Structures are given as structure tokens and as C-alpha cells.
Length: 358
Ligand code: GH3
Ligand code: MG
Ligand code: MG
Ligand code: MG
View 1 (cartoon, rainbow, N blue to C red):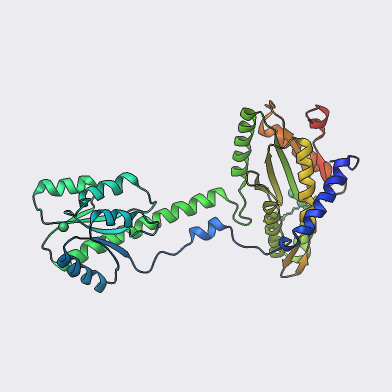
View 2: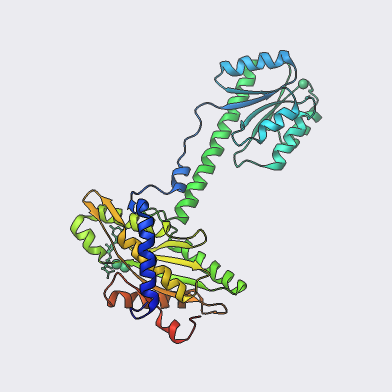
């Protein structure tokens, strides 16, 4: 936005007002992104096991062994109780189910567990039964049991089966964690925790399509840290990294839920503001610019401040110019903001000339 518009002074005042009220969040301390924290969680030390058994004698006998072997024992006396326990978010993933149970039979529990898949972790099922015909074994496995033990059984055989189950569950947990880590690595920028370039571009593409369908504009802003090379040169690369992370966090904290922000390149960010025409996008950019400029950044080299220059544009409803031309417009506006002195916002000139401003 140029200095001449009234919007500039209005938004600056609005920005300052908000900075005053948000003074508590203005000192940035950098934490790892939540998603990355979640992926590195540790597995539980003891394994929970569900024993569903209606016979008090077997319940006591098996329960005593399970506790001796170090399992964290959860007991159900009938099928209904077992099914309820299995619905909990922290339900045991290792289960020992008697075939013959009041209310819901063990084999029916197997079917339900496999059908609902309510939990991302696998549930390992060992069926216990007095039946020993070949058909029963097949029926149990087809219903979803992983293993099968005929009563009366040797406790060591039970222990061996459960240890095998535990190993399978641990492998499955590792696979899920690896998949989750890979997904996070492919989606987020490691340093800032923001969406990476590919993801923020995909987000822009989706928002443009949604905007066209809903006849609603989409604001796009390119933001670039001013004289960032000087920060690196004067205070070192790691202080530079801290500043980069802090600016990223400030940008993120100033957005609405449905806005998007990603790291577009080195010290450059792309912001997407659905529902914002050029005037509103420029106003919001000005607020964000002011907020970044007012935010103190604590680094090992002392308290610092960074400023950003921003280029704003928007795709108005019915605009089919696409991602590339929008990015070009934002980039040209950013170039203008740098040329006109930095720590400022410029709106896209073509956008203004083509009268897309509502
Ligand atoms: P301008 O105001 O014109 O944008 O100047 P500038 O110094 O910010 O821009 P320039 O393109 O000359 O330098 C950008 C610097 O950003 C150079 C590069 O080393 C640094 N940079 C890019 N990515 C990272 C990063 O992940 N960490 C750190 N510490 N520096 C980075
Ligand atoms: Mg029974
Ligand atoms: Mg820069
Ligand atoms: Mg740059």
C-alpha cells in the first residue's frame, strides 16, 4: 500500500492498538512445532493387556500369571464390559478373549474390533477356548483373531504367544511413528515449523479453487525479512535462525484459523488470506508488518527486532489468473516495498490498474 491512502494511517493505528493489547505475546520464545513434538512420543514402558474371562477360576489363574509376567492387567467379566473397555482412547492393544462370554462372545468381539478400526494402533487378539475342532480355529482366525489357545493350556505357551503379540504391536507402533514422522517432514519446514513451500502452494491452489466456487476473493502476501543477511553477518547464523523462527511464529500468531502461512524460501514467507480483497489484504498486511516490527526477539546475542517488507495482491471472485500470476504480482509488489525503503507494505499495481479493487 502507498503512503497516500487513508487506509495506511488507519491500519497503522489499528496495528498499534492491537500491539498494546497484545503486549504479553510480543516477546517471542521459540518452541518446536507441536506436530514434531507429538511424533517423538515414547512408547509405554509396560504393556496393558485386556483379559476377558467369565470363569472366576480362569480369571484368577491367568490374571496371576499376567501380573507376574509384568503386564498391566485390565479385566472384563463379560463381553459387554470388554467391548466398553476397548472403546477407551488408552484401551489395551493386547487382548486375551475367552470365546464363550456372556452378552457378547469373544468371536463377536473379534469381528467388532476389526470392523470398527476406531484406533490407529492395531489390536492384537488371542482367543481362548475349550473348543478344539479345526473349524473353530478357522472361524476364530477369520473373525480377526491373531492367535488361538485351547484350554487347558500350559502357562509358558500362553506367555510365548503374548510375547509374540507384544512384538507385533511394538513393530506396528514404530511403523505408525515412522509414517507420521515422514508425513511431518514432508509437510512442514523443519526450522520454522510452518508449512513448507510445496504445501503452502498446494494450500493456495485449494483456496483459489474454493474462492472461485464460493465467489469469494483470496488475499496473497509475500513477506521478506529486511537486511537479514546483516543479522547473519553481525550476529552469526544461529542468531539468524532464532530471528527467522521468531518472525515465523509472529506471523502465525497473527492469523485467523482459516488463513495459511508457509516458508516460501530462505527468509521469505507466503501468507494466504481467504475472503480478503486487495484493500483488506493490504490492511491486514500492514497490521502484521507493524506487529513484527514491534516484537522483541530474545537471542543469545541479546534482544533484537526484525522488520519485514510485504507485497500484497488478491484474486477476486471470478479471477482465473492462477497461482503463478498471483505470485508474480505479489513478488513485484514486494520488490516495490523493498525499493521504497523496506519495513512497508505495497499492493499490487496491476491489480489496482485492472480495477479489481472492490
Ligand atoms: P533484503 O532486505 O533486500 O531482503 O536483504 P536481505 O539481506 O534480507 O536479503 P538477501 O537475499 O541479500 O539475503 C538473505 C539472506 O538470508 C542470505 C541467506 O544466507 C539468509 N538465509 C536464508 N535462509 C536462512 C536460514 O535458514 N538461516 C539463516 N540464518 N539465514 C538464512
Ligand atoms: Mg467363558
Ligand atoms: Mg530479505
Ligand atoms: Mg529474500
